[in-house]
Image 1 (cartoon, rainbow, N blue to C red):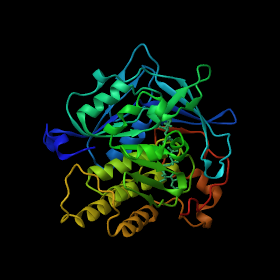
Image 2 (image 1 turned 60 degrees about the horizontal axis):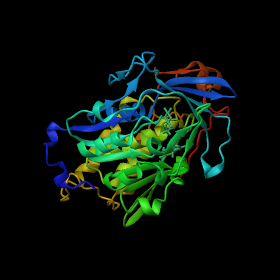
Image 3 (image 1 turned 120 degrees about the vertical axis):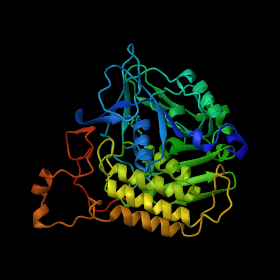
Length: 384
Ligand SMILES: Nc1ncnc2c1ncn2[C@@H]1O[C@H](COP(=O)(O)OP(=O)(O)O)[C@@H](O)[C@H]1O
Ligand SMILES: O=P([O-])([O-])O[C@@H]1[C@@H](O)[C@H](O)[C@@H](O)[C@H](O)[C@@H]1O
Protein backbone atom coordinates (compact mmCIF):
# COMPACT_ATOMS: atom_id res chain seq x y z
CA UNK A 1 0.00 0.00 0.00
CA UNK A 2 1.16 3.51 -0.68
CA UNK A 3 2.18 5.55 2.31
CA UNK A 4 3.69 9.00 2.39
CA UNK A 5 7.10 7.42 3.05
CA UNK A 6 6.90 5.35 -0.14
CA UNK A 7 7.09 8.60 -2.09
CA UNK A 8 10.10 9.89 -0.25
CA UNK A 9 12.70 9.82 -3.07
CA UNK A 10 11.50 12.66 -5.28
CA UNK A 11 9.28 15.67 -5.03
CA UNK A 12 6.03 15.45 -7.01
CA UNK A 13 7.39 17.96 -9.56
CA UNK A 14 10.25 15.59 -10.45
CA UNK A 15 7.99 12.60 -10.92
CA UNK A 16 6.11 11.50 -14.01
CA UNK A 17 2.54 11.45 -12.84
CA UNK A 18 1.43 8.32 -14.67
CA UNK A 19 3.59 5.61 -16.28
CA UNK A 20 1.59 3.39 -18.65
CA UNK A 21 3.19 0.05 -19.56
CA UNK A 22 1.69 -2.19 -22.25
CA UNK A 23 1.99 -2.80 -25.98
CA UNK A 24 0.06 -0.92 -28.63
CA UNK A 25 -1.65 -3.30 -30.99
CA UNK A 26 -3.64 -3.52 -34.19
CA UNK A 27 -7.28 -4.43 -33.54
CA UNK A 28 -9.41 -6.08 -36.22
CA UNK A 29 -13.11 -6.31 -35.40
CA UNK A 30 -14.77 -9.27 -37.10
CA UNK A 31 -18.34 -10.38 -37.58
CA UNK A 32 -19.34 -13.48 -39.49
CA UNK A 33 -15.76 -13.78 -40.77
CA UNK A 34 -16.00 -10.29 -42.28
CA UNK A 35 -13.75 -7.43 -41.21
CA UNK A 36 -16.03 -4.72 -39.76
CA UNK A 37 -13.39 -2.24 -38.60
CA UNK A 38 -9.68 -1.87 -38.00
CA UNK A 39 -8.24 0.32 -35.29
CA UNK A 40 -5.32 1.16 -33.08
CA UNK A 41 -5.74 -0.97 -29.95
CA UNK A 42 -4.12 -2.11 -26.75
CA UNK A 43 -5.04 -0.97 -23.27
CA UNK A 44 -2.13 1.48 -23.37
CA UNK A 45 -3.67 3.39 -26.29
CA UNK A 46 -7.14 3.63 -24.73
CA UNK A 47 -5.74 4.64 -21.34
CA UNK A 48 -3.34 7.29 -22.67
CA UNK A 49 -6.21 8.67 -24.77
CA UNK A 50 -8.23 9.28 -21.57
CA UNK A 51 -5.34 10.40 -19.36
CA UNK A 52 -4.14 12.86 -22.02
CA UNK A 53 -7.71 14.01 -22.59
CA UNK A 54 -7.92 14.86 -18.89
CA UNK A 55 -4.61 16.81 -19.19
CA UNK A 56 -2.75 14.55 -16.76
CA UNK A 57 0.94 14.17 -17.63
CA UNK A 58 1.97 10.65 -18.51
CA UNK A 59 4.66 8.53 -20.10
CA UNK A 60 4.19 5.28 -21.98
CA UNK A 61 6.36 2.22 -22.62
CA UNK A 62 5.21 0.05 -25.50
CA UNK A 63 6.75 -2.23 -28.12
CA UNK A 64 5.71 -2.67 -31.75
CA UNK A 65 7.14 -4.10 -34.96
CA UNK A 66 8.17 -2.14 -38.07
CA UNK A 67 4.68 -2.90 -39.44
CA UNK A 68 3.04 -0.63 -36.82
CA UNK A 69 0.69 1.59 -38.81
CA UNK A 70 -0.93 4.22 -36.59
CA UNK A 71 0.21 7.69 -35.51
CA UNK A 72 0.48 7.82 -31.71
CA UNK A 73 1.35 10.41 -29.05
CA UNK A 74 4.11 8.34 -27.42
CA UNK A 75 6.80 6.85 -29.64
CA UNK A 76 6.95 3.10 -29.06
CA UNK A 77 10.10 0.97 -29.03
CA UNK A 78 10.32 -0.56 -32.51
CA UNK A 79 11.60 -4.14 -32.59
CA UNK A 80 12.86 -4.92 -36.11
CA UNK A 81 12.72 -8.67 -35.56
CA UNK A 82 9.17 -8.72 -34.25
CA UNK A 83 5.67 -7.96 -35.56
CA UNK A 84 3.18 -5.65 -33.88
CA UNK A 85 0.70 -7.47 -31.64
CA UNK A 86 -2.56 -8.08 -33.54
CA UNK A 87 -5.92 -9.08 -32.07
CA UNK A 88 -8.96 -10.28 -33.99
CA UNK A 89 -12.17 -9.74 -32.03
CA UNK A 90 -15.12 -11.90 -33.13
CA UNK A 91 -18.55 -10.51 -32.33
CA UNK A 92 -20.54 -13.54 -33.46
CA UNK A 93 -21.43 -14.62 -29.95
CA UNK A 94 -24.69 -13.34 -28.58
CA UNK A 95 -24.63 -11.19 -25.48
CA UNK A 96 -25.87 -13.44 -22.69
CA UNK A 97 -27.39 -11.22 -20.04
CA UNK A 98 -24.85 -10.47 -17.36
CA UNK A 99 -22.40 -13.14 -18.51
CA UNK A 100 -20.78 -10.44 -20.68
CA UNK A 101 -19.15 -12.86 -23.13
CA UNK A 102 -19.67 -10.47 -26.00
CA UNK A 103 -16.60 -11.35 -28.05
CA UNK A 104 -13.99 -13.99 -28.67
CA UNK A 105 -10.46 -12.61 -28.92
CA UNK A 106 -7.62 -14.16 -30.92
CA UNK A 107 -4.06 -12.92 -30.68
CA UNK A 108 -2.77 -13.48 -34.19
CA UNK A 109 0.69 -12.05 -33.59
CA UNK A 110 2.59 -10.96 -30.50
CA UNK A 111 5.34 -8.39 -30.13
CA UNK A 112 8.18 -8.82 -27.65
CA UNK A 113 7.58 -8.63 -23.92
CA UNK A 114 8.42 -5.45 -22.01
CA UNK A 115 11.42 -6.10 -19.77
CA UNK A 116 12.52 -4.26 -16.60
CA UNK A 117 15.37 -2.66 -18.58
CA UNK A 118 12.79 -1.05 -20.92
CA UNK A 119 11.32 0.97 -18.04
CA UNK A 120 12.52 4.48 -17.17
CA UNK A 121 14.80 4.85 -14.15
CA UNK A 122 12.93 7.90 -12.87
CA UNK A 123 10.20 7.39 -10.31
CA UNK A 124 6.54 7.74 -11.25
CA UNK A 125 3.62 8.46 -9.02
CA UNK A 126 1.20 5.99 -10.59
CA UNK A 127 2.31 2.96 -12.61
CA UNK A 128 -0.19 1.13 -14.79
CA UNK A 129 0.59 -2.46 -15.80
CA UNK A 130 -1.79 -2.88 -18.69
CA UNK A 131 -0.58 -5.57 -21.06
CA UNK A 132 -2.96 -7.28 -23.46
CA UNK A 133 -0.89 -9.96 -25.17
CA UNK A 134 1.24 -11.39 -22.35
CA UNK A 135 3.90 -8.67 -22.61
CA UNK A 136 4.08 -7.88 -18.88
CA UNK A 137 6.53 -10.27 -17.20
CA UNK A 138 6.55 -10.87 -13.42
CA UNK A 139 9.94 -9.16 -13.21
CA UNK A 140 8.55 -6.16 -15.13
CA UNK A 141 5.70 -5.79 -12.67
CA UNK A 142 8.15 -6.12 -9.79
CA UNK A 143 10.31 -3.33 -11.25
CA UNK A 144 7.23 -1.11 -11.60
CA UNK A 145 6.40 -1.74 -7.95
CA UNK A 146 9.93 -0.62 -7.02
CA UNK A 147 9.87 2.56 -9.11
CA UNK A 148 6.25 3.73 -8.76
CA UNK A 149 4.50 5.02 -5.65
CA UNK A 150 1.32 3.12 -6.51
CA UNK A 151 0.78 0.41 -9.11
CA UNK A 152 -2.54 -0.24 -10.84
CA UNK A 153 -2.92 -3.53 -12.66
CA UNK A 154 -5.44 -4.75 -15.21
CA UNK A 155 -5.93 -8.45 -14.48
CA UNK A 156 -5.95 -9.13 -18.24
CA UNK A 157 -2.20 -8.48 -18.16
CA UNK A 158 -1.79 -11.33 -15.67
CA UNK A 159 -4.22 -14.15 -16.47
CA UNK A 160 -4.37 -14.35 -20.28
CA UNK A 161 -2.96 -17.37 -22.06
CA UNK A 162 -3.05 -17.90 -25.81
CA UNK A 163 -3.99 -21.03 -27.73
CA UNK A 164 -0.85 -22.33 -29.43
CA UNK A 165 -2.70 -23.03 -32.70
CA UNK A 166 -5.06 -20.09 -33.31
CA UNK A 167 -4.19 -17.65 -30.51
CA UNK A 168 -7.62 -17.73 -28.86
CA UNK A 169 -7.43 -15.88 -25.55
CA UNK A 170 -8.18 -18.04 -22.52
CA UNK A 171 -8.02 -17.07 -18.87
CA UNK A 172 -6.29 -18.90 -16.04
CA UNK A 173 -6.77 -18.58 -12.29
CA UNK A 174 -4.84 -15.66 -10.83
CA UNK A 175 -3.50 -17.79 -7.99
CA UNK A 176 -1.86 -20.11 -10.54
CA UNK A 177 0.20 -17.29 -12.03
CA UNK A 178 3.63 -16.04 -11.00
CA UNK A 179 2.09 -12.64 -10.32
CA UNK A 180 0.08 -13.82 -7.33
CA UNK A 181 2.75 -13.19 -4.71
CA UNK A 182 3.08 -9.56 -5.91
CA UNK A 183 -0.54 -8.65 -5.11
CA UNK A 184 0.15 -7.35 -1.57
CA UNK A 185 2.52 -4.82 -3.15
CA UNK A 186 0.09 -3.33 -5.67
CA UNK A 187 -2.56 -0.70 -5.00
CA UNK A 188 -5.49 -1.60 -7.26
CA UNK A 189 -6.41 -4.65 -9.34
CA UNK A 190 -9.06 -4.06 -12.01
CA UNK A 191 -11.06 -6.90 -13.58
CA UNK A 192 -14.17 -7.16 -15.72
CA UNK A 193 -16.95 -9.32 -14.27
CA UNK A 194 -15.98 -12.02 -16.77
CA UNK A 195 -12.38 -11.96 -15.52
CA UNK A 196 -13.25 -11.59 -11.82
CA UNK A 197 -14.36 -15.25 -11.61
CA UNK A 198 -10.71 -16.17 -12.16
CA UNK A 199 -9.73 -14.77 -8.76
CA UNK A 200 -10.95 -15.10 -5.21
CA UNK A 201 -12.13 -11.53 -4.64
CA UNK A 202 -12.59 -12.16 -0.89
CA UNK A 203 -8.93 -13.14 -0.61
CA UNK A 204 -7.43 -10.51 -2.93
CA UNK A 205 -9.31 -7.58 -1.34
CA UNK A 206 -7.33 -8.24 1.86
CA UNK A 207 -4.17 -7.18 0.00
CA UNK A 208 -5.23 -4.52 -2.48
CA UNK A 209 -8.28 -2.67 -3.68
CA UNK A 210 -10.25 -4.68 -6.27
CA UNK A 211 -12.42 -2.94 -8.88
CA UNK A 212 -14.82 -5.12 -10.86
CA UNK A 213 -16.41 -3.47 -13.89
CA UNK A 214 -19.71 -4.80 -15.13
CA UNK A 215 -20.60 -3.25 -18.48
CA UNK A 216 -23.78 -1.18 -18.44
CA UNK A 217 -24.26 -1.90 -14.72
CA UNK A 218 -21.25 0.24 -13.75
CA UNK A 219 -18.66 -1.14 -11.33
CA UNK A 220 -18.05 -2.29 -7.79
CA UNK A 221 -15.10 -1.37 -5.58
CA UNK A 222 -13.92 -3.81 -2.88
CA UNK A 223 -11.37 -3.00 -0.22
CA UNK A 224 -10.35 -4.66 3.04
CA UNK A 225 -13.16 -3.23 5.13
CA UNK A 226 -15.91 -2.45 2.68
CA UNK A 227 -17.39 -2.40 -0.79
CA UNK A 228 -19.36 0.05 -2.86
CA UNK A 229 -21.35 -0.08 -6.11
CA UNK A 230 -20.73 2.85 -8.45
CA UNK A 231 -23.57 3.73 -10.84
CA UNK A 232 -23.13 3.79 -14.63
CA UNK A 233 -23.95 6.39 -17.29
CA UNK A 234 -26.37 5.89 -20.15
CA UNK A 235 -24.69 4.77 -23.36
CA UNK A 236 -25.67 3.79 -26.86
CA UNK A 237 -23.26 0.88 -27.28
CA UNK A 238 -21.67 0.26 -30.67
CA UNK A 239 -18.43 -1.48 -29.76
CA UNK A 240 -17.45 -2.65 -26.25
CA UNK A 241 -13.72 -2.72 -27.11
CA UNK A 242 -11.61 -0.69 -24.72
CA UNK A 243 -14.38 0.13 -22.23
CA UNK A 244 -12.44 -1.45 -19.37
CA UNK A 245 -9.24 0.31 -20.46
CA UNK A 246 -10.91 3.71 -20.68
CA UNK A 247 -12.53 3.04 -17.31
CA UNK A 248 -9.08 2.51 -15.81
CA UNK A 249 -7.77 5.66 -17.51
CA UNK A 250 -10.60 7.75 -16.07
CA UNK A 251 -10.26 6.15 -12.64
CA UNK A 252 -6.54 6.88 -12.42
CA UNK A 253 -6.93 10.39 -13.89
CA UNK A 254 -9.45 11.06 -11.09
CA UNK A 255 -7.18 9.69 -8.36
CA UNK A 256 -4.15 11.63 -9.65
CA UNK A 257 -6.19 14.79 -9.35
CA UNK A 258 -7.07 13.99 -5.76
CA UNK A 259 -10.57 12.57 -6.03
CA UNK A 260 -11.73 9.96 -3.53
CA UNK A 261 -12.01 6.41 -4.88
CA UNK A 262 -15.83 6.46 -5.37
CA UNK A 263 -15.68 9.76 -7.28
CA UNK A 264 -12.72 8.56 -9.38
CA UNK A 265 -14.67 5.39 -10.19
CA UNK A 266 -17.49 7.59 -11.48
CA UNK A 267 -15.00 9.23 -13.83
CA UNK A 268 -13.97 5.72 -14.90
CA UNK A 269 -17.60 4.79 -15.58
CA UNK A 270 -18.05 7.98 -17.60
CA UNK A 271 -15.09 7.24 -19.90
CA UNK A 272 -16.14 3.59 -20.20
CA UNK A 273 -19.59 4.69 -21.34
CA UNK A 274 -18.16 7.22 -23.83
CA UNK A 275 -15.90 4.54 -25.29
CA UNK A 276 -18.62 1.98 -26.07
CA UNK A 277 -20.44 4.61 -28.14
CA UNK A 278 -17.71 4.64 -30.77
CA UNK A 279 -15.98 2.02 -32.84
CA UNK A 280 -12.31 1.55 -32.02
CA UNK A 281 -10.28 4.15 -30.16
CA UNK A 282 -12.72 6.93 -29.20
CA UNK A 283 -12.25 10.60 -29.99
CA UNK A 284 -13.58 12.73 -27.17
CA UNK A 285 -15.17 16.06 -28.01
CA UNK A 286 -12.93 18.84 -26.64
CA UNK A 287 -15.93 20.75 -25.20
CA UNK A 288 -17.10 17.64 -23.40
CA UNK A 289 -13.60 17.11 -21.99
CA UNK A 290 -13.51 20.72 -20.79
CA UNK A 291 -16.82 20.31 -19.01
CA UNK A 292 -15.63 17.12 -17.35
CA UNK A 293 -12.41 18.82 -16.25
CA UNK A 294 -14.44 21.73 -14.86
CA UNK A 295 -16.63 19.31 -12.89
CA UNK A 296 -13.55 17.57 -11.49
CA UNK A 297 -12.07 20.94 -10.45
CA UNK A 298 -15.34 21.94 -8.81
CA UNK A 299 -15.44 18.63 -6.97
CA UNK A 300 -11.85 19.08 -5.75
CA UNK A 301 -12.66 22.56 -4.45
CA UNK A 302 -15.35 21.04 -2.21
CA UNK A 303 -12.67 19.03 -0.39
CA UNK A 304 -9.85 21.52 -0.09
CA UNK A 305 -10.43 21.69 3.65
CA UNK A 306 -9.98 17.90 4.11
CA UNK A 307 -6.68 16.84 5.64
CA UNK A 308 -5.51 13.93 3.53
CA UNK A 309 -2.12 12.61 2.49
CA UNK A 310 -1.59 12.89 -1.26
CA UNK A 311 -0.76 9.21 -1.34
CA UNK A 312 -3.67 7.74 0.59
CA UNK A 313 -6.71 6.33 -1.16
CA UNK A 314 -9.98 7.50 0.37
CA UNK A 315 -12.56 4.74 0.02
CA UNK A 316 -15.59 6.21 1.73
CA UNK A 317 -18.26 7.84 -0.40
CA UNK A 318 -17.86 11.61 0.03
CA UNK A 319 -20.87 13.89 0.51
CA UNK A 320 -22.25 15.06 -2.81
CA UNK A 321 -21.24 11.88 -4.68
CA UNK A 322 -24.70 11.55 -6.25
CA UNK A 323 -24.58 15.20 -7.32
CA UNK A 324 -21.17 14.60 -8.93
CA UNK A 325 -22.69 11.66 -10.84
CA UNK A 326 -25.54 13.88 -12.00
CA UNK A 327 -23.16 16.67 -13.08
CA UNK A 328 -20.97 14.30 -15.11
CA UNK A 329 -24.09 12.75 -16.64
CA UNK A 330 -25.34 16.22 -17.60
CA UNK A 331 -21.96 17.04 -19.16
CA UNK A 332 -22.17 13.87 -21.21
CA UNK A 333 -25.74 14.30 -22.39
CA UNK A 334 -25.66 18.01 -23.20
CA UNK A 335 -25.87 18.64 -26.95
CA UNK A 336 -23.86 18.72 -29.13
CA UNK A 337 -21.83 16.03 -27.32
CA UNK A 338 -24.56 13.44 -27.08
CA UNK A 339 -25.35 11.36 -30.11
CA UNK A 340 -28.01 9.41 -28.24
CA UNK A 341 -30.22 12.35 -27.33
CA UNK A 342 -30.69 13.63 -30.89
CA UNK A 343 -34.43 13.52 -31.68
CA UNK A 344 -35.55 12.30 -35.09
CA UNK A 345 -36.49 15.12 -37.43
CA UNK A 346 -36.90 15.18 -41.20
CA UNK A 347 -33.44 16.77 -41.47
CA UNK A 348 -31.69 13.89 -39.71
CA UNK A 349 -33.75 11.10 -41.15
CA UNK A 350 -31.84 7.78 -41.38
CA UNK A 351 -30.85 8.35 -45.01
CA UNK A 352 -29.25 11.72 -44.33
CA UNK A 353 -27.73 10.62 -41.04
CA UNK A 354 -25.85 7.89 -42.87
CA UNK A 355 -24.06 10.53 -44.90
CA UNK A 356 -23.32 12.82 -41.95
CA UNK A 357 -20.13 11.94 -40.10
CA UNK A 358 -20.71 11.64 -36.37
CA UNK A 359 -18.21 14.03 -34.77
CA UNK A 360 -16.76 11.54 -32.27
CA UNK A 361 -15.31 9.19 -34.84
CA UNK A 362 -11.57 8.77 -34.70
CA UNK A 363 -9.23 9.07 -37.64
CA UNK A 364 -7.39 6.07 -36.22
CA UNK A 365 -10.22 3.63 -36.79
CA UNK A 366 -11.05 2.54 -40.30
CA UNK A 367 -14.77 1.87 -40.18
CA UNK A 368 -16.32 -0.63 -42.48
CA UNK A 369 -19.76 -0.60 -40.91
CA UNK A 370 -21.94 1.57 -38.73
CA UNK A 371 -21.82 -0.75 -35.75
CA UNK A 372 -20.00 -3.88 -34.72
CA UNK A 373 -23.39 -5.31 -33.86
CA UNK A 374 -25.77 -5.77 -36.76
CA UNK A 375 -28.59 -4.38 -34.71
CA UNK A 376 -30.49 -1.14 -35.18
CA UNK A 377 -28.85 1.60 -33.15
CA UNK A 378 -30.99 2.13 -30.09
CA UNK A 379 -31.63 5.50 -28.60
CA UNK A 380 -31.50 4.51 -24.93
CA UNK A 381 -29.40 1.65 -23.65
CA UNK A 382 -27.59 0.90 -20.45
CA UNK A 383 -30.24 2.54 -18.32
CA UNK A 384 -29.13 2.33 -14.69
N1 LIG B 1 -23.22 -0.48 -22.42
C1 LIG B 1 -22.66 0.31 -21.49
N2 LIG B 1 -23.37 1.35 -20.99
C2 LIG B 1 -22.81 2.19 -20.07
N3 LIG B 1 -21.56 2.05 -19.58
C3 LIG B 1 -20.82 1.02 -20.03
C4 LIG B 1 -21.33 0.09 -21.00
N4 LIG B 1 -20.37 -0.83 -21.24
C5 LIG B 1 -19.31 -0.50 -20.46
N5 LIG B 1 -19.58 0.60 -19.73
C6 LIG B 1 -18.69 1.28 -18.76
O1 LIG B 1 -17.35 0.85 -18.99
C7 LIG B 1 -16.86 0.10 -17.86
C8 LIG B 1 -16.02 -1.07 -18.34
O2 LIG B 1 -16.81 -1.90 -19.15
P1 LIG B 1 -16.73 -3.49 -19.09
O3 LIG B 1 -17.55 -3.98 -20.23
O4 LIG B 1 -17.11 -3.96 -17.73
O5 LIG B 1 -15.16 -3.76 -19.28
P2 LIG B 1 -14.34 -4.60 -20.39
O6 LIG B 1 -14.24 -3.72 -21.59
O7 LIG B 1 -13.02 -4.82 -19.74
O8 LIG B 1 -15.11 -5.88 -20.61
C9 LIG B 1 -18.09 -0.30 -17.05
O9 LIG B 1 -17.80 -0.44 -15.68
C10 LIG B 1 -19.03 0.85 -17.34
O10 LIG B 1 -18.76 1.92 -16.47
O1 LIG C 1 -11.98 -4.12 -24.28
P1 LIG C 1 -10.96 -4.18 -23.16
O2 LIG C 1 -10.98 -5.49 -22.45
O3 LIG C 1 -11.04 -3.01 -22.24
O4 LIG C 1 -9.48 -4.08 -23.82
C1 LIG C 1 -9.16 -4.57 -25.12
C2 LIG C 1 -8.24 -5.76 -24.99
O5 LIG C 1 -8.95 -6.76 -24.29
C3 LIG C 1 -7.86 -6.29 -26.36
O6 LIG C 1 -6.94 -7.36 -26.23
C4 LIG C 1 -7.22 -5.22 -27.22
O7 LIG C 1 -6.95 -5.74 -28.50
C5 LIG C 1 -8.12 -4.01 -27.30
O8 LIG C 1 -7.51 -3.00 -28.04
C6 LIG C 1 -8.46 -3.50 -25.93
O9 LIG C 1 -7.31 -3.07 -25.27
